[in-house]
Image (cartoon, rainbow, N blue to C red; front, side):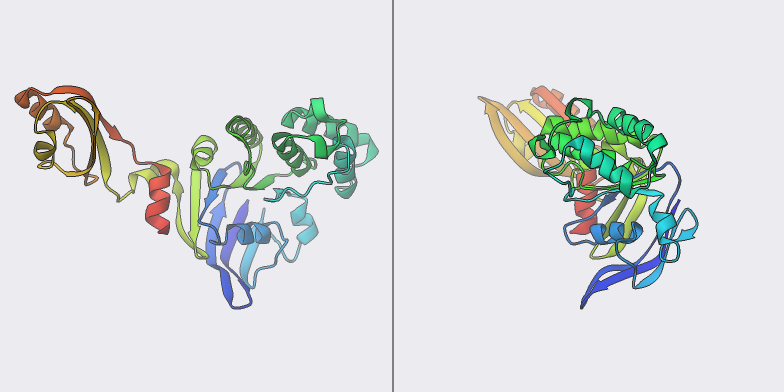
Length: 304
């Protein structure tokens, strides 16, 4: 559905995107990750044909984006990071305006409006001014305009930026539902959103593609240390545990009880030894668990 071949883009002397090649299949929901300034937004703007690449080729459903720009744009729905709504309009007026831009005729318009209102859950605010809406509802209206023309591809740039935790969950669930029928590229700094909605992650840094795989495989490929959390009641806890790994943190939780974080190589397994040591030393073991490698760890490993 989306194919980038050696795509580059520069602004003056700054190389924003540097020879990126990737393919995204129909129906995939892909997390697009990278630090600030990595080139994510520039790449998405080239896919949506807001920018033209300096080098390389972008194919949307087999069509060259620079040669068939109008045809390509009909296949794409785009929610930019700043969600540029017309604040003085009613939601109904704004969506009718979008329908005009998308050349949706009168016979089809009512059906299209009913569909996007239902899919994005904005029925209660349909006749309200946009500037009176909460940030969460404004994002829903932005998503409604992006899917008005039933695009095959949906590109979302930081769709939950500035939302509270409850609103984030609502928009995350909405994106997941929308992704059941479309190819979706989701750019975000919130790793929980990628884990909750995406099956694959693409990571870029300084304009270059540095990782592209399923979330499970990326987690398996982690080279970082793992962390064992222990809560123990007993004597001489620290010197004994230091023989097993690097004690990164030790705090006294209650009198005679210690919380310890031990760092070990990824392929090491010391939990049975801790349990045997606790039995031998007569310690009372309150807690023993391994912290799972997170997508945040992978992101830091690859981009720092």
